[in-house]
Structures are given as C-alpha cells and as structure tokens.
Image (cartoon, rainbow, N blue to C red):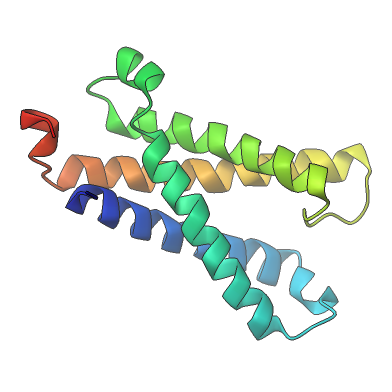
Length: 143
C-alpha cells in the first residue's frame, strides 16, 4: 500500500521537476521550438515521464544505504537520492539518444548532466521536505 507521505512526495516532486524541465528547455534553451511534432503532444508525454521520474526519486529516498548514513536527515537524503537518480537518468537518456543536446560535444553533455542532476536533486529535496512535514505512522510502527 502506498502511504500518504509517499503519494504527496511523488506528486509534488513530479510537478516541481516538470516545472523546472519546462523552464529550462522551454524558456532558457528554447528546445521546444525545434520539435518536429506538436508541442502539446510532447508535453503530455513529458508529464508521464516526470511522473515516472518522481516515483523513482520518491522511492529512492528510502534506500537502505542512505538510511544507514542519514537516518534523521531527510533533506540530505532527498538531495543525494535525487542527484543519483538524475545522473542515472542522464546516462540512460544519452544511451538511447533521447537526451536534449545540440550535438555530441563534451560541453553539451556536461551541461546536460549538470542540469539533470540539479533538477532531480531539487525533486529529491521536495521529497525530503514532504518527509519532514507529512506524518507517516508506518515509519514509527512499521508496515
């Protein structure tokens, strides 16, 4: 069963990362202008992708490795889990060729990976903030 804390952190981080994505790619880089199909379709697909990314980031904060070192530090756990997810997603996107990049120059790849890590770190921070403010009795009593 999904807890209230997980659902809220999943949706909040997904929305936060989608907004960051839209601002970065749509306003700063103007990547949307280069789309060869309607922007609306791309944004609908992107929203589903960010729901998946948010799900993974919200689950990653409960990693046993992070729990061991940062038991009572949900904001740090969120930042670290988000950064690891961001790096992992960047690698997957680059391998399958889905990443936004103006070419294969190392400068573009470094910019892309930096942004991906920052974006997912902020998503992880949102998850950590939800963990601070939303009570979840399963963390006290167990499932």
